[in-house]
Length: 182
Image 1 (cartoon, helix red, strand yellow):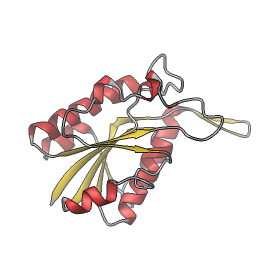
Image 2 (spheres, one colour):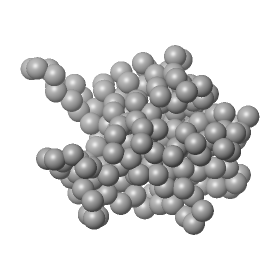
Image 3 (cartoon, one colour):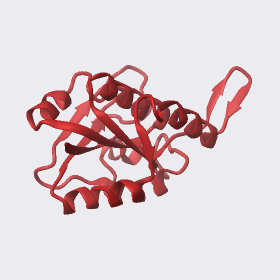
Image 4 (cartoon, one colour):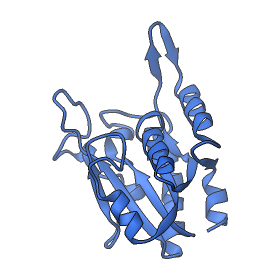
C-alpha cells in the first residue's frame, strides 16, 4: 500500500516565543523531524500543511509573519508539496485529496499540531475518506483548555483526543514504531 506523510501545522507560532505556544511543541517538532527524515530516506511522499489565519480577530498564523512559517524542525525541501489551509480540516479547500488520489496513496501517517483541533479533524476526515491512518502521537502537541470552571491540562487533552482517535479512526503509535515499519 502506498504511504504518505502529512505534517500538519508545524509552524513557528506554536513553538516557544510564538503567539500560541503549545505544551510539548519542541519535543513534538523533534519527533516530527525524525519521521520526516525517515520518509525522505525511503523516498516516500511528504506533504506539508500550513495554516493561514484569514478570519477577523485571528491572533496567530497571521499572513506575512514569522509565526506563520513552517518551523525549522519540519521545513520542506524542494519537491515536497506545501498546501495552505484556512480551516482545521487539511482536506477542506486544499488539493490534498486530489494529490493523494493521483498518487494512489492508501495509508496516511499524520503528525503535527494542535492535536485537539487540526490533527483530530484531519485524521477523522482522512478515515472518512477511506484512508488507513497512522497517527504519530509523540510528534503531536496541544494546549490546556478551559470549559466552564474546569481547566483541562494539555496532557489530559492530548490523552483524551489520542485515545478517542485510536482504533476507530487511526492506529496511534510512537514515531519509533512507524519508522521501524516503513
